[in-house]
Image (cartoon, rainbow, N blue to C red):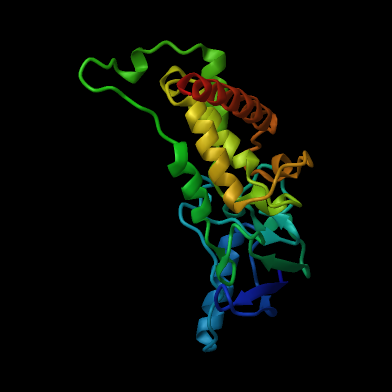
Length: 254
């Protein structure tokens, strides 16, 4: 299989970007997409050309590092699939494949196809933890959690923080990511003590970097783990409750 790559090249956050065209020849359809990129980069190095930067780590659809736009779709147009899980058999001989980084203000380009997703880290730092009393605190598996609740929390925890939801959203909103990270804690007993402080802290931090949700639903379609937008509704409900609760507490203190 022979394909043509149009790759976004950018030397740094402030540098101008441009597309460059590379040929990928004799590619096996059994290869993963990232293996194909590795081969193209190896050939560029042999020719004395700087290889294009692309992020990856586990290559098993777990870490979320590999996210790029492929032909205008986050991770490509195969649903429920991260870039590292995409295989060349999904393409045809002679195809032209356009590779771009996530394009959102909250994800500044570091180099080529690599973006800075530390804004997601700031959201997690704002409230992605629980308080566990020491001493007489029971083991976590001793706290009963209804199976239905545990299943929903596990679905939320499947989020790998790749940023495809932001890349797909016309507003560059991060509500799907934030709501998933909230739900995995807010659904279980261990997450209740900070529940309302958590939702306010994480949502307020999110709004520093990303746009607002207007219910397009593109985030759910682009998510490689098929996270549902139901979690956004749950987050909004908790955020409203938290604001009323905090206002009432402030009124009592006054």
